Image 1 (cartoon, one colour):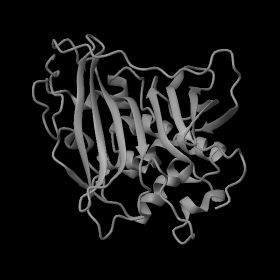
Image 2 (cartoon, one colour; image 1 turned 45 degrees about the horizontal axis):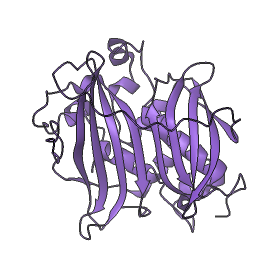
Image 3 (cartoon, rainbow, N blue to C red; image 1 turned 90 degrees about the horizontal axis):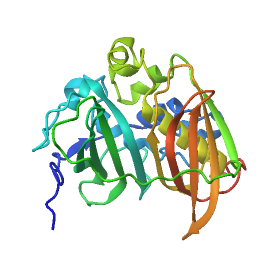
Length: 311
């Protein structure tokens, strides 16, 4: 058997995470939930629910209710056998999240942890290096897993250290020659990232122009995870009746940056491929008139049409 690559299997120390109802309300509004979805936006609604992708913010937020020094927080634990990467030059590569159990509206009275392990560290040469991880959100007292996120971080221009190139990635392209079943839009503005960052993702890249200029983006860019989450919201609203129980899995690859003020246009294809009641959906998000920003889009959903939520 070939021995595992550098860093593979390394486990970060478990990190406690917590959230209040207020955090959940802010998240839902910051990704575009609207007044016709009060079950995400009003804590006294009889079906008040956490938007399913909320766990992606917890590795940044942890237990804090205050702003965080993003660069200091990212320097947490060294992965053995690989170089120390510079977290001031990191962008998201790809993210997939599987939903096992709905989150309670607040973590109060319980102890939740994120448990993260390294799946692979890959040297892509001059463009940079990829760190692929799996992060489980776990109830520490019962061991129950609420969600599992697998994702990759791309450390820009930090390659050529002699590591493995890594496997070819699996692609989920839109069906050839088929018009999309649904197209929806999200108009961002200069404040989109300034609101989204209050969830706990305080990377200066999304607030001030200097880091983005250094990385070749020309200035500040919107969080890749904003586009990821806002697209998940519009998918659930347009196909799943805004019912959080109608999405089981969701993923996308971060293909190019989004600038504050860009309009995001998402094309969605139903594949008709249904397994155990879940249909595979493919999608692609472009900046209007420009490049694809979310590629490889795939979700497992129960499609209930564009009917208004019965919640």
